[in-house]
Length: 359
Ligand SMILES: [Zn+2]
Image (cartoon, rainbow, N blue to C red; front, side):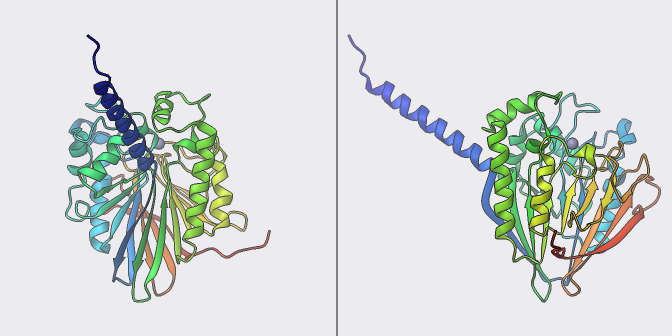
């Protein structure tokens, strides 16, 4: 007897629906059109910027990586200045210590506790949002688990998509800040030279064919910058730096004219395990900060105006003023845990949006 065709048809419809749902989810993970908005009444807006912190948690045997020293100094700073959030520039979870894998494996991975919640467990850092981008070490494993964790487990670790926008208002004049959070991995890694090929398999799962996806993402960034030109401040946040020629790998440098054209105030990055600053110039008018020394140290890429001493770990502390339209910043060296709150090693100020110069 012939089997009826109907069940097969139903099966096909179910399969097609599942495929469609997967594709839809993946495209939402890439970028979201939802803008996260928040308002503060304070006259100043205070926040911390750092990255590259996920090294070994609290394992006493691995304290040499100093993640906890930076966490403790950040807690003191955030508490003293009433910081409103952390801008997290990525490389959230490394391989190391007792863990023999990069990133996280699932939303229930033990690393969420041992490397994040149990380390940044002071009253302030454990109550404010961490606005996050993904670094290369997050991509080497299951980057979508980090998005899933943000969406479904704990949105204080805020990563609703790989590319997203926030708008913050603060102060009596209601100053507005636009934050464009981007994933720079696609701009930084060239398949021919990148050693960790697993990343490209994950790009494929995300549907990122190389050149087409790069063009699409560059356009996404430019479109968001155009939309947010009314903001008094514009910050762009990515994992990979743009300071120095050695940092501008593959298609990274194409970001510079885009950020410049739309009068971005500053670009925040990590990846290089240093504290580093490049002032705006007439040719590249946005300021650049690297704060990638959240748990470990490495060499800087030359081309900066200032860089931390070899072996320094620490973070960047920023305060912007509604009244004066100025931004003040300081890099804090937290290498020596016996110095409570760390030591200011470099500081300065900037105006809110760079002026336009004819070229
Ligand atoms: Zn990195």
